[in-house]
Length: 125
Figure (cartoon, rainbow, N blue to C red):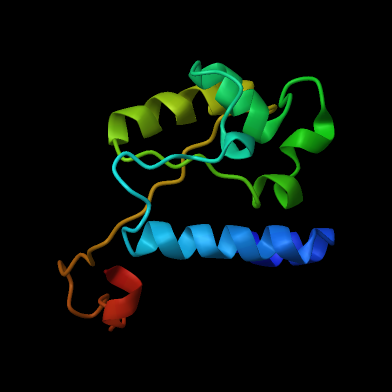
């Protein structure tokens, strides 16, 4: 995805090639231990709130920062669910509008056989 975005932004072909090579090195475990992250890819601070601002921009004051078209191209990845929950909580507090919860189910109730619809497994798994 990121390489495709670089193409769309008209970035330098050498920059794209270097990024693609880095992705392959990471995926194949050839980056060393610990991995040296290039300086231009480092966040300006170790504070999660600064990281959120750096990735997403000012979600409160800048209406364009919270547009779905812009947000869909941004992500913060972390290996621990506790960190994910903390970062999501900060981001959700900054987004304009009311918070809504959408519930889902991954099983079908079989109380009345006449009411049961034969759902394909791909829809309920």
